[in-house]
Amino acid sequence: MSLAGSRPIVAIPGPSPVPDRVLRAMHRVSPDIYGEDLASANAALMDGLRWLAGTRGKVAAFIGNGHAAWEAASANLLSPGDAVLVLVSGRFGEGWAELLRAQGIAVEVMDCEADAPDPSRLAARLAEDRARAIRAVCVCQIDTASSVQADIAALRQAMGDHPALLMVDAIASLGCAPMRMDDWGVDVLLAASQKGLMCPPGCCFLWLSDRAAAMPATPLTSPWWDMRPRLRADQLWQFWGGTPPVQHIFGLTEALAIMREEGLEQVWARHRALADCVAAAFECWAAGGDIALSVVRPQARAASVTAVRLAGADALRGWLELRAGLTLGIGLGAADPANALRVAHMGDAGAVQVLGVLAAMQAGMAALGIAHGPGALDAAAAVVAVRA
Ligand SMILES: *Cc1c(COP(=O)(O)O)cnc(C)c1O
Image (cartoon, rainbow, N blue to C red; front, side):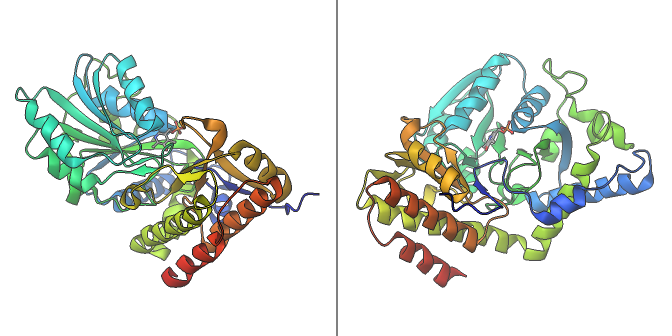
């Protein structure tokens, strides 16, 4: 028998759940795209996105997903043959490096395994670069596959006076983990609409420091991807390189309103508490089964997603979908994907949802005979009790 209700829970790390308020805001016919109302809504949205990223810099908007954000960044700021250092902590870092390589960029990977990039290792590598040949350092703030979270402020500090651009993929972290782009000295920040921003996939953004925004086009800059006409646009169609994504403008505006009402610090603290809640449960389960958090050091664990090794993960995911109405993330990038999974706590997530996910998982493990240690739900509830 299935005990799934009518509203399934999808706890995959993107696209994340879209709040009802956002869905309702998007459920509108398109107004005149040449009218004043939409242009001013768009301008207000960009101000909101600056607030979210902690920057007074510029935003370039594109219709596209996270991969499009990657390509937008390099197509605007890098040239074939440029040396770029990519700090890789998981499959998404690898994917970014692959895209850069395909654009003819001379990629060097610093493999950080399933741990946060070590700032002193970055400092040492850049110190060797006496010719200052490295043009950019690229890093995912959260690698969604391994669930590693990098310390962006520490990495920037480690760069010292090296002139490389710091490019940060915040696709799975913006709106989930702290981001203070200007204070930290990030040059280029990338994000897309469908993760912490709680909207459907379809829009991506580059936030640019003054230095990055002033850089000239490169041989990789094609007319549509060029951010410069977008940055100096005085009409909405120029801003988006054509028809604006009208309903996304409404949806993103509502998502930002939700975050403003909660408070940004509170949004970040909620994600951290939920991540700790999930980790507490897994630590208990791990004590009595072939189960382990992918990220060993608590300081390197992501706020928005938790990746684990769990013997029987595929069977468990199947059981949960059918019997409990819960979908968990696949073991993307894991050494043994059939025995790995990811639990998302990204965007529109709360205590009831996460405690429900963990309780359903425990039910599934019991039903399937997957060995697991005791006390996980008590430990998860205790985190909520202390932090709520
Ligand atoms: C999801 C994700 C991407 C890719 O985004 P798509 O929308 O799937 O193209 C890139 N980087 C990170 C960190 C992500 O989480």
